Length: 279
Ligand code: HPA
Image (tube, rainbow, N blue to C red; front, side, top):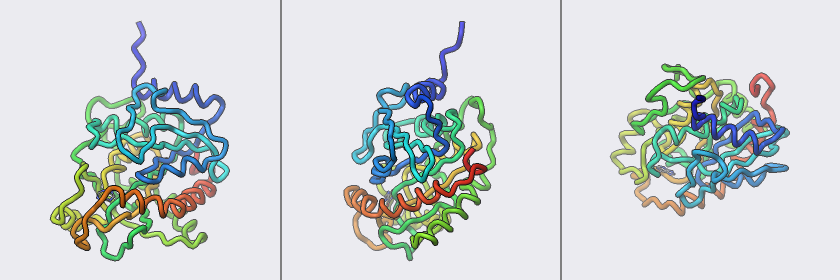
């Protein structure tokens, strides 16, 4: 008797079948309001989550539910439009499922994007922040439980975001005249936005931006040896920084407004990836 395929294998198998001869080398996780990058891929093949075993259907407005494979910056990429958030009630294993599937498909480079609240006082609304390091304060970890094939029990997290990729992103931003901040991203569970005291706590812990995704996905990616690069769109000052109220519709609006800049940055990075950085 053969064992049933694991969720990662089953999902990867379905995607492989849908992609045919296509072999994406880069995966891009699209955050709130940034899904439109998926529409910019040339010659796209779309795979709805309904056709991928174990992929739940998204419940959040502003997140589609599909993978889109196409060309960006001359490379074959696989974009995830609609991520699985812990606050939807998903276990960490589901939040990290797509990333594990990307690794199982042989994708070695992962670019993650998100919308985040700005903690650093000098961040303006709509700023782009490259993630230098992260604090996982979601109290969830996708590696808890049996070690999955191809993963490490105790992955090193001293460089969660690849120094070479970050260097490349700085160069691309400079060449394209894009202002790129750099800082520490802190993931909380959500879905309520933070209180001013929680933001002060995050600030004292060393965070520059706060959001509800990404860190858990990066943990799974590092356990499989993927190189990660992360960008936050600073859609609002975090609670208490300016005293104004937070509103999801405004978060989406700002994310969409600066999505073009983020897209140019991501496209530039993908175009410049050397074969050594994109196996
Ligand atoms: N907090 C948490 N997540 C967010 C925020 C915020 O202020 N803005 C966008 N996503």
